[in-house]
Image (cartoon, rainbow, N blue to C red; front, side, top):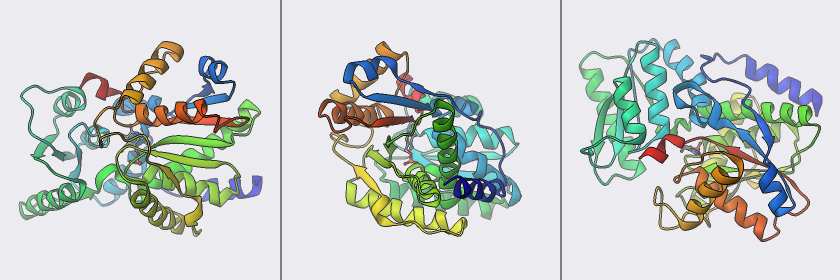
Length: 327
Ligand SMILES: Cc1ncc(COP(=O)(O)O)c(C=O)c1O
Protein backbone atom coordinates (compact mmCIF):
# COMPACT_ATOMS: atom_id res chain seq x y z
CA UNK A 1 0.00 0.00 0.00
CA UNK A 2 2.87 2.38 0.85
CA UNK A 3 4.18 2.22 -2.71
CA UNK A 4 0.72 2.93 -4.13
CA UNK A 5 0.29 5.90 -1.78
CA UNK A 6 3.66 7.41 -2.71
CA UNK A 7 2.93 6.89 -6.41
CA UNK A 8 -0.50 8.58 -6.04
CA UNK A 9 1.02 11.50 -4.10
CA UNK A 10 3.62 12.05 -6.82
CA UNK A 11 0.92 12.09 -9.50
CA UNK A 12 -1.22 14.51 -7.49
CA UNK A 13 1.75 16.81 -6.87
CA UNK A 14 2.07 17.32 -10.62
CA UNK A 15 -1.23 19.28 -10.78
CA UNK A 16 -0.89 23.05 -10.27
CA UNK A 17 -2.64 24.48 -7.22
CA UNK A 18 -3.17 27.93 -5.78
CA UNK A 19 -2.52 27.00 -2.16
CA UNK A 20 -5.31 28.85 -0.38
CA UNK A 21 -6.43 26.06 1.99
CA UNK A 22 -4.63 25.74 5.30
CA UNK A 23 -3.49 22.14 5.14
CA UNK A 24 -3.34 19.61 6.63
CA UNK A 25 -6.57 20.16 8.52
CA UNK A 26 -6.76 18.77 12.07
CA UNK A 27 -8.04 15.25 12.64
CA UNK A 28 -8.96 14.31 16.19
CA UNK A 29 -11.05 11.99 18.33
CA UNK A 30 -14.57 13.08 19.25
CA UNK A 31 -14.20 12.19 22.92
CA UNK A 32 -17.75 12.76 24.18
CA UNK A 33 -19.46 11.12 21.19
CA UNK A 34 -17.05 8.15 21.34
CA UNK A 35 -17.90 7.68 25.05
CA UNK A 36 -21.64 8.09 24.46
CA UNK A 37 -21.82 5.33 21.85
CA UNK A 38 -18.86 3.12 22.81
CA UNK A 39 -17.44 3.52 19.30
CA UNK A 40 -14.19 5.28 18.33
CA UNK A 41 -15.31 8.31 16.33
CA UNK A 42 -12.86 10.84 14.86
CA UNK A 43 -13.42 14.06 12.98
CA UNK A 44 -11.45 15.43 10.01
CA UNK A 45 -11.87 19.18 10.36
CA UNK A 46 -12.28 20.41 6.80
CA UNK A 47 -14.46 23.14 8.27
CA UNK A 48 -11.05 24.59 9.19
CA UNK A 49 -9.52 24.85 5.70
CA UNK A 50 -9.47 28.56 6.49
CA UNK A 51 -9.57 30.57 3.29
CA UNK A 52 -12.89 32.31 2.62
CA UNK A 53 -14.44 30.84 5.81
CA UNK A 54 -13.29 27.35 4.83
CA UNK A 55 -15.05 24.08 4.11
CA UNK A 56 -14.62 21.35 1.50
CA UNK A 57 -14.98 23.79 -1.41
CA UNK A 58 -11.79 25.62 -0.47
CA UNK A 59 -9.77 22.53 -1.36
CA UNK A 60 -11.57 22.26 -4.71
CA UNK A 61 -10.84 25.91 -5.49
CA UNK A 62 -7.11 25.41 -4.87
CA UNK A 63 -7.10 23.37 -8.10
CA UNK A 64 -9.89 25.11 -10.00
CA UNK A 65 -8.46 28.60 -9.51
CA UNK A 66 -5.12 27.34 -10.84
CA UNK A 67 -7.00 26.15 -13.95
CA UNK A 68 -8.81 29.49 -14.25
CA UNK A 69 -5.55 31.47 -14.01
CA UNK A 70 -3.88 29.17 -16.51
CA UNK A 71 -6.78 29.90 -18.90
CA UNK A 72 -6.00 33.62 -18.40
CA UNK A 73 -9.65 34.46 -17.83
CA UNK A 74 -10.78 37.77 -16.36
CA UNK A 75 -14.14 36.50 -15.07
CA UNK A 76 -15.44 33.43 -13.25
CA UNK A 77 -19.10 32.38 -13.44
CA UNK A 78 -20.56 29.70 -11.20
CA UNK A 79 -23.92 28.78 -9.69
CA UNK A 80 -25.53 27.14 -6.68
CA UNK A 81 -28.29 27.30 -4.10
CA UNK A 82 -29.01 30.68 -2.54
CA UNK A 83 -26.72 29.95 0.43
CA UNK A 84 -24.13 28.15 -1.69
CA UNK A 85 -20.82 27.59 0.09
CA UNK A 86 -19.10 26.90 -3.20
CA UNK A 87 -20.23 30.26 -4.59
CA UNK A 88 -18.93 32.08 -1.50
CA UNK A 89 -15.50 30.48 -1.77
CA UNK A 90 -15.36 30.94 -5.54
CA UNK A 91 -16.04 34.64 -4.94
CA UNK A 92 -13.29 34.84 -2.30
CA UNK A 93 -10.79 32.95 -4.48
CA UNK A 94 -11.50 34.79 -7.74
CA UNK A 95 -11.73 38.28 -6.34
CA UNK A 96 -8.57 37.82 -4.28
CA UNK A 97 -6.75 37.11 -7.55
CA UNK A 98 -8.22 40.18 -9.28
CA UNK A 99 -10.96 38.42 -11.28
CA UNK A 100 -14.63 39.43 -11.53
CA UNK A 101 -16.96 36.79 -10.13
CA UNK A 102 -20.59 36.30 -11.17
CA UNK A 103 -22.77 34.01 -9.04
CA UNK A 104 -26.04 32.56 -10.34
CA UNK A 105 -28.04 31.74 -7.21
CA UNK A 106 -31.27 29.77 -6.98
CA UNK A 107 -33.99 31.72 -5.19
CA UNK A 108 -35.58 35.09 -4.77
CA UNK A 109 -33.35 38.12 -4.16
CA UNK A 110 -33.79 38.63 -0.40
CA UNK A 111 -34.57 42.00 1.18
CA UNK A 112 -32.00 41.36 3.91
CA UNK A 113 -28.75 39.54 3.24
CA UNK A 114 -27.85 36.71 5.61
CA UNK A 115 -25.22 33.97 5.93
CA UNK A 116 -23.16 33.38 2.80
CA UNK A 117 -24.95 36.21 0.96
CA UNK A 118 -23.42 38.74 3.35
CA UNK A 119 -19.98 37.37 2.52
CA UNK A 120 -20.71 37.36 -1.25
CA UNK A 121 -21.66 41.03 -0.96
CA UNK A 122 -18.61 42.03 1.13
CA UNK A 123 -16.40 40.35 -1.47
CA UNK A 124 -18.02 42.33 -4.28
CA UNK A 125 -19.34 39.39 -6.30
CA UNK A 126 -22.12 40.11 -8.83
CA UNK A 127 -25.19 38.04 -7.97
CA UNK A 128 -27.94 36.90 -10.36
CA UNK A 129 -31.00 35.40 -8.67
CA UNK A 130 -33.06 32.76 -10.47
CA UNK A 131 -36.38 31.98 -8.84
CA UNK A 132 -37.63 28.42 -8.28
CA UNK A 133 -34.68 26.91 -10.05
CA UNK A 134 -33.42 23.32 -9.81
CA UNK A 135 -29.74 22.59 -10.37
CA UNK A 136 -30.28 21.97 -14.11
CA UNK A 137 -31.93 25.41 -14.50
CA UNK A 138 -29.05 26.97 -12.59
CA UNK A 139 -26.52 25.43 -14.98
CA UNK A 140 -28.49 26.70 -17.96
CA UNK A 141 -28.70 30.19 -16.50
CA UNK A 142 -25.02 30.24 -15.61
CA UNK A 143 -24.19 29.23 -19.22
CA UNK A 144 -26.43 32.06 -20.43
CA UNK A 145 -24.72 34.59 -18.12
CA UNK A 146 -21.31 33.33 -19.29
CA UNK A 147 -22.33 33.75 -22.98
CA UNK A 148 -23.62 37.25 -22.30
CA UNK A 149 -20.37 38.27 -20.58
CA UNK A 150 -18.36 36.78 -23.45
CA UNK A 151 -20.40 38.80 -25.93
CA UNK A 152 -19.27 41.87 -23.95
CA UNK A 153 -15.64 40.86 -24.49
CA UNK A 154 -14.99 39.08 -21.19
CA UNK A 155 -12.89 35.92 -21.03
CA UNK A 156 -14.98 33.64 -18.83
CA UNK A 157 -14.03 30.53 -16.87
CA UNK A 158 -17.32 28.80 -15.96
CA UNK A 159 -17.43 26.29 -13.11
CA UNK A 160 -20.38 23.85 -12.82
CA UNK A 161 -22.38 23.60 -9.57
CA UNK A 162 -20.29 22.68 -6.53
CA UNK A 163 -17.04 22.50 -8.49
CA UNK A 164 -17.83 18.84 -9.02
CA UNK A 165 -15.80 18.38 -12.16
CA UNK A 166 -12.86 15.93 -12.24
CA UNK A 167 -10.29 18.60 -11.33
CA UNK A 168 -12.41 19.73 -8.34
CA UNK A 169 -13.03 16.16 -7.23
CA UNK A 170 -9.32 15.47 -7.35
CA UNK A 171 -8.92 17.84 -4.40
CA UNK A 172 -10.56 15.10 -2.37
CA UNK A 173 -8.19 12.47 -3.71
CA UNK A 174 -5.50 14.74 -2.25
CA UNK A 175 -7.52 15.01 0.96
CA UNK A 176 -7.77 11.23 1.03
CA UNK A 177 -3.96 10.93 1.07
CA UNK A 178 -4.01 13.44 3.94
CA UNK A 179 -6.45 11.17 5.81
CA UNK A 180 -4.03 8.27 5.30
CA UNK A 181 -1.31 10.47 6.86
CA UNK A 182 -3.70 11.21 9.76
CA UNK A 183 -4.13 7.47 10.31
CA UNK A 184 -0.39 7.05 10.51
CA UNK A 185 0.06 9.98 12.89
CA UNK A 186 -2.74 8.71 15.16
CA UNK A 187 -1.48 5.12 14.93
CA UNK A 188 -4.86 3.75 13.85
CA UNK A 189 -6.73 2.62 10.75
CA UNK A 190 -10.18 3.98 9.99
CA UNK A 191 -12.81 1.45 8.92
CA UNK A 192 -15.36 3.93 7.68
CA UNK A 193 -15.47 7.52 6.42
CA UNK A 194 -18.87 9.23 6.63
CA UNK A 195 -19.56 12.66 5.13
CA UNK A 196 -22.16 14.89 3.48
CA UNK A 197 -22.61 14.41 -0.27
CA UNK A 198 -24.56 16.40 -2.82
CA UNK A 199 -22.89 17.46 -6.07
CA UNK A 200 -20.68 14.38 -5.68
CA UNK A 201 -17.17 15.77 -6.05
CA UNK A 202 -16.05 15.16 -2.49
CA UNK A 203 -17.11 11.53 -2.52
CA UNK A 204 -15.85 10.91 -6.06
CA UNK A 205 -12.40 12.20 -5.04
CA UNK A 206 -12.29 10.10 -1.87
CA UNK A 207 -13.31 6.98 -3.78
CA UNK A 208 -10.63 7.63 -6.40
CA UNK A 209 -8.10 7.75 -3.55
CA UNK A 210 -9.45 4.58 -1.95
CA UNK A 211 -9.24 2.62 -5.21
CA UNK A 212 -5.82 3.99 -6.17
CA UNK A 213 -4.27 3.02 -2.84
CA UNK A 214 -6.10 -0.21 -2.01
CA UNK A 215 -7.40 1.21 1.29
CA UNK A 216 -9.88 -1.33 2.64
CA UNK A 217 -12.35 0.88 4.56
CA UNK A 218 -15.80 2.00 3.46
CA UNK A 219 -16.89 5.46 2.41
CA UNK A 220 -20.52 6.49 2.85
CA UNK A 221 -21.94 9.75 1.56
CA UNK A 222 -25.03 10.99 3.35
CA UNK A 223 -27.11 12.77 0.74
CA UNK A 224 -28.18 16.34 1.44
CA UNK A 225 -30.97 16.23 -1.13
CA UNK A 226 -30.52 13.87 -4.07
CA UNK A 227 -31.97 10.36 -4.17
CA UNK A 228 -29.56 7.49 -3.73
CA UNK A 229 -29.66 6.00 -7.26
CA UNK A 230 -29.18 9.36 -9.00
CA UNK A 231 -26.35 10.46 -6.72
CA UNK A 232 -24.54 7.11 -6.80
CA UNK A 233 -24.63 7.14 -10.61
CA UNK A 234 -23.34 10.71 -10.74
CA UNK A 235 -20.51 9.94 -8.31
CA UNK A 236 -19.53 6.77 -10.17
CA UNK A 237 -19.20 8.70 -13.46
CA UNK A 238 -17.26 11.52 -11.80
CA UNK A 239 -14.97 9.12 -9.90
CA UNK A 240 -14.16 7.39 -13.16
CA UNK A 241 -13.36 10.70 -14.88
CA UNK A 242 -11.24 11.76 -11.90
CA UNK A 243 -9.39 8.44 -11.87
CA UNK A 244 -8.69 8.90 -15.59
CA UNK A 245 -6.78 12.11 -14.85
CA UNK A 246 -4.57 9.92 -12.68
CA UNK A 247 -4.47 7.13 -15.24
CA UNK A 248 -6.63 4.89 -13.07
CA UNK A 249 -10.15 3.53 -13.02
CA UNK A 250 -13.02 3.63 -10.53
CA UNK A 251 -15.52 0.88 -9.77
CA UNK A 252 -19.23 1.45 -9.35
CA UNK A 253 -19.39 -0.91 -6.31
CA UNK A 254 -17.28 1.42 -4.17
CA UNK A 255 -19.93 4.17 -4.35
CA UNK A 256 -22.34 4.09 -1.41
CA UNK A 257 -24.87 6.81 -0.67
CA UNK A 258 -27.44 6.83 2.10
CA UNK A 259 -30.40 9.10 1.30
CA UNK A 260 -32.40 8.38 4.47
CA UNK A 261 -31.60 11.68 6.20
CA UNK A 262 -32.76 14.23 3.59
CA UNK A 263 -36.17 14.83 5.17
CA UNK A 264 -38.46 16.97 3.03
CA UNK A 265 -35.74 18.08 0.67
CA UNK A 266 -32.49 19.90 -0.03
CA UNK A 267 -31.86 22.79 2.38
CA UNK A 268 -35.02 22.04 4.38
CA UNK A 269 -33.86 21.40 7.95
CA UNK A 270 -34.79 18.16 9.73
CA UNK A 271 -35.39 17.57 13.46
CA UNK A 272 -32.63 14.93 13.51
CA UNK A 273 -30.25 17.37 11.78
CA UNK A 274 -31.09 20.07 14.31
CA UNK A 275 -30.43 17.61 17.13
CA UNK A 276 -27.06 16.71 15.58
CA UNK A 277 -26.13 20.40 15.25
CA UNK A 278 -26.87 20.91 18.95
CA UNK A 279 -25.15 17.72 20.10
CA UNK A 280 -21.92 18.50 18.22
CA UNK A 281 -21.94 22.06 19.61
CA UNK A 282 -22.73 21.07 23.21
CA UNK A 283 -20.57 17.94 23.50
CA UNK A 284 -17.67 18.70 21.17
CA UNK A 285 -17.67 22.48 20.68
CA UNK A 286 -17.99 21.95 16.93
CA UNK A 287 -20.44 23.88 14.75
CA UNK A 288 -22.17 22.07 11.90
CA UNK A 289 -24.75 23.48 9.46
CA UNK A 290 -28.35 22.45 8.74
CA UNK A 291 -28.03 21.83 4.98
CA UNK A 292 -25.11 19.38 4.77
CA UNK A 293 -23.09 18.49 7.85
CA UNK A 294 -26.03 18.48 10.29
CA UNK A 295 -27.90 15.98 8.10
CA UNK A 296 -24.71 13.92 7.60
CA UNK A 297 -24.12 13.91 11.37
CA UNK A 298 -27.76 12.88 11.94
CA UNK A 299 -27.00 9.85 9.75
CA UNK A 300 -23.81 9.14 11.68
CA UNK A 301 -25.65 9.34 15.03
CA UNK A 302 -28.49 7.13 13.76
CA UNK A 303 -26.01 4.51 12.54
CA UNK A 304 -24.26 4.67 15.95
CA UNK A 305 -27.58 4.34 17.79
CA UNK A 306 -28.57 1.33 15.69
CA UNK A 307 -25.21 -0.36 16.33
CA UNK A 308 -24.32 -0.29 12.62
CA UNK A 309 -20.79 0.95 13.38
CA UNK A 310 -20.06 -1.32 16.33
CA UNK A 311 -16.38 -2.24 16.63
CA UNK A 312 -15.39 0.14 13.83
CA UNK A 313 -13.14 3.19 13.84
CA UNK A 314 -15.18 5.89 12.20
CA UNK A 315 -14.05 9.14 10.62
CA UNK A 316 -16.65 11.89 10.24
CA UNK A 317 -15.42 14.29 7.57
CA UNK A 318 -16.68 17.76 8.54
CA UNK A 319 -17.09 19.56 5.22
CA UNK A 320 -17.87 23.02 6.62
CA UNK A 321 -20.86 25.13 5.62
CA UNK A 322 -21.05 26.94 8.96
CA UNK A 323 -21.95 30.44 7.57
CA UNK A 324 -25.43 28.90 7.00
CA UNK A 325 -25.96 29.12 10.76
CA UNK A 326 -26.34 32.88 10.27
CA UNK A 327 -28.86 32.54 7.43
C1 LIG B 1 -20.69 22.25 3.58
C2 LIG B 1 -20.83 21.27 2.48
N1 LIG B 1 -20.71 19.98 2.78
C3 LIG B 1 -20.83 19.04 1.82
C4 LIG B 1 -21.10 19.37 0.52
C5 LIG B 1 -21.23 18.29 -0.49
O1 LIG B 1 -20.07 18.18 -1.23
P1 LIG B 1 -20.16 17.74 -2.75
O2 LIG B 1 -20.98 18.80 -3.42
O3 LIG B 1 -18.77 17.68 -3.21
O4 LIG B 1 -20.88 16.43 -2.79
C6 LIG B 1 -21.23 20.74 0.16
C7 LIG B 1 -21.53 21.19 -1.20
O5 LIG B 1 -22.44 20.93 -1.86
C8 LIG B 1 -21.10 21.71 1.18
O6 LIG B 1 -21.20 23.01 0.89
